[in-house]
Every structure is written in structure tokens, then in C-alpha cells.
Length: 180
Length: 180
Image 1: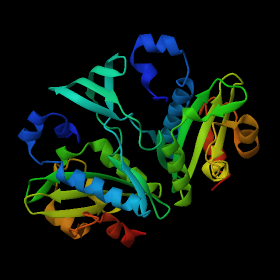
Image 2 (image 1 turned 90 degrees about the vertical axis):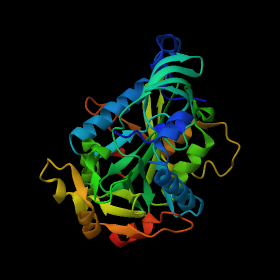
Image 3 (image 1 turned 30 degrees about the horizontal axis):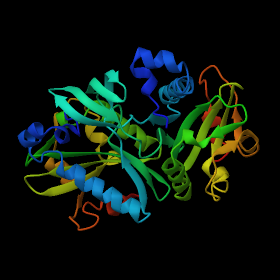
Image 4 (image 1 turned 45 degrees about the vertical axis):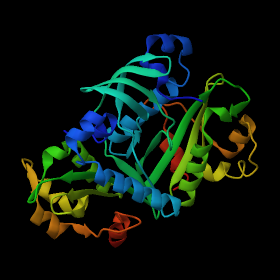
């Protein structure tokens, strides 16, 4: 399981895990800031849920991270509800599904059924390639439920390559435009 | 300032503050669960953002609550993006604006401009009345920027009374239906 912000919180963990999961996240956060500042879209990262056990005044003195009930990002673009998860993998051949919770996949598929635009952004760090795959295009893949990963070939065929940019760095809304 | 979940976390604070801010929140959470279970809408409360200073293994050993950058609730209903804040007040005559951050008001107005449906749910606990007021209907009130509260009369005139129900307890989507 992969708790999105864990690496940021202590230097020790940061050094151990290196950039894994951080670069894509910070690239997307900065792209979302660009969209917001330019009044293009209002998309935010949700805070990581925490269970607080002990509170002293305003300080949390004991607690832990909880499993998010939905996805990391959601918001509004051209009047449409946007919802997605963003993940990195070092694999060169497939996206391992232990990277993402099953209920998050279910959530993304449900959003698609209710008229929202939902997808996963997957970065293959070793290949330096970032893809977007819409829930509507991976829903059939999950019909057969015991999958352990999504092959890169499936993602290449059913998803879209997001070209690196300067600002925004990850211009994923350009891909979303194809869908609207 | 009002940090939504603070009261839940220690018995001491819970006793001190009594029900303030909790009843409406739990009523809305249970209504959202009803909407979700019955496949009517997918609306979730966002986690309260926390800044973690010290992490030992999986345990948070020092941290604090941060001011949310957006609102408490958002999601998807009938293909529409929904975004709102929910607040209680003990006042019988007005909704004090120190209950809500200015940037949250700005966020709600921006959502409205981008084609989303945004509103505040306000419960007057002493009157036992819960209202919904859409951002489109309070935007003019905030044009003149130095307001300290919204009078109840303004809310009665420009908002909608949400009738108490059994399940969902706070059927705010019935009001949203008027807007779609």
C-alpha cells in the first residue's frame, strides 16, 4: 500500500524512498496551481486522512494515516466533475495494482457511470513516460477481477501519452479535452 | 475559526463544546452515506488537513491541523459538480462570518462561475432550522466586502429551508434539484 504523502514527513523516509511517488505528485500539484491561477480549472489534492488519537491543545500527539476512502484529486473543469488518482511505478512493463486500492478503482468507475470524468495518471519513471487512462477505457479490464497489474501495452493502446511541458508540467487537461 | 473535526478527538473537548458543529456534520455524513448506498450521488467529506512534524514508524507523534484550502464537501450528482460548506450557529438572528474563511467564500463563488453547484448549509441550532443558500444567491451580498454576518432574514429570503427527514436526515439534494 502506498500512502501518498508519507515521504514528505521525515527526512529519513524521504532519503530512503528517494523520489518515488513525489515527483509526479509535485508536478501535478504545480500543474493544478497553474490551472487555478489562470482560471482554467479548480482541481485540488485532498488531504491525506489521519486518525487523531491524542490531541494536546492544538497539537496532535498521537495518530496515524488512514486509507483514503476515495481518490487523491478532484475538482471542476469546463463545468465537468473531474476525479483521478496519480501513481508512479518503476516497472518498465506494467502498472502493478498493489499501487492502488480496489475501492479507488470502484470509485473511479462509479464516477464515470454518474457522468463525471475519471482517470488514472500513471508515470513509468524508468521510461520517463506519463500516461492518462480514463475509467471508461479500463472498466472492461477489471471485469475479470483477479488482475495483478495492467500491462504497459494495454495502457499504450487504451490510454494517452501526456507530453512533458514547461508550465503546466503535466498538461493532463489537454487529454481531458478529447473526452469533453 | 472552526476546525470541523476537533471536537471528535478528545473527550475533554467534546464535553466542553457539546454538540456544536457535530450534529450537522454527522447528519450530513449520514445523508451522504444514504445517497452513496442508493447510488444517488457520490459526495464525500474531505479529510481535515494536518501538518505532520514528527513521524515514528507509522505513528504521527507531532503535528497540527491546518486551515483547509477549500471546503469540507464535494462530489458528483446527476453529472454536476457539487461543492459546499456546512456550518452551525447558535445565533437566532444571523450567521456570523467568522464561522467561515474568506477564501472558502471565494472558492464557492469561483465554483459557481465555472459551472459547478456551490452552496453553504447553515443550521441555526437555537431555532432548529437548517437552510441551504447557493453561492449564486449570496455573491451579491459579498460585493460589499466588510460584512461581519449574514442576517437570518437575508438567508430566509434568498435561501431554502431544508425540512428534517428520517433518511436522509438532511435531504439537501432535493433543494439542489431546483437548481439543475
